[in-house]
Image (cartoon, rainbow, N blue to C red; front, side, top):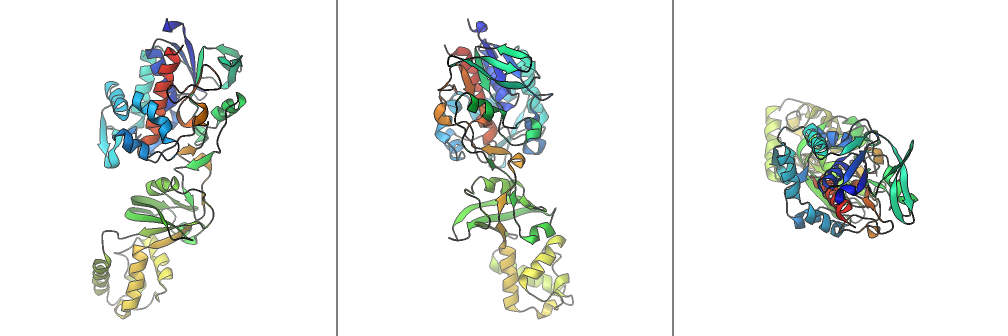
Length: 414
């Protein structure tokens, strides 16, 4: 019976391939349409090419890492959990490992292995993959009848839109799905960048361009109220436009209504040392370089690119001999090392974001099936929906779970 159902899946990314596999596994005749010359382009570059496929956590913990519409995902995660994702890839020949923060990666550290597994599963279940651009969704009397291609109508009983967000357009995620959704009457909430580098007009960022910091602590405050809005420990990097790196990308998802000067970052360069221990360390370095100028005595404490910045911010005469540096000046130096402050001004453009915040309104989607409430036979899955999460494998899990549910529902629903 199910073999009679023809399903067109639009978009060959994480959600699209998973939707195609589950629809085909349920007996449907599936055509996967991808406008790029291969599937999984964005998947190949996720996690710096390592691909953080999911997070090995409970449902409750998972939903706590979804700031936008977490309750909507309950049905999808119940159908295809983080454990299901791990089992899927292990069974498909990709051994996995769990790292810090319960982030799950392929043991090979190769995102290509994840793409290969999905591609092989599509092939194994008889999915017909076509590299063609979809122009729109064909509707008749409130029901899907197929997708419009440049050469004409491709008829289908169900259509699953898995076109991704508006970030990384070079991988194919250029907002097609939002246009399709709007044209058939769906609401698309405002699109904003999330998990994105942050712009700072503070000139010290450009001065330290290319400098990476590891094992530092980051705190971000609302300047007016002094309220702490985010803190983390890990890696970051200075760039010509501001700051980036894992901590910064994570922080961006926690900063609502970003406006110039609203937020300030404080970087603790020596988080493992309390004030007394740090002072002892500074005195030890000063003793080692006792006949040197202050500017030439910081090489063991700081990266070379940061020394001019700390010198200027401290207000201490760079040519002052270190044995003449006062107790009060050492305190100023300690405060800088425990809290180098940078004003934040904006997010980088959405095409540089890892994830798009916003999308097809979840109020118009059935969370138990991923089917449109406005158009019979039309389904949505993945980043095209107004759901986003923090870093740590959560966003890919959302894509896999909503894709799996949409694919199975499209193949089995009346």
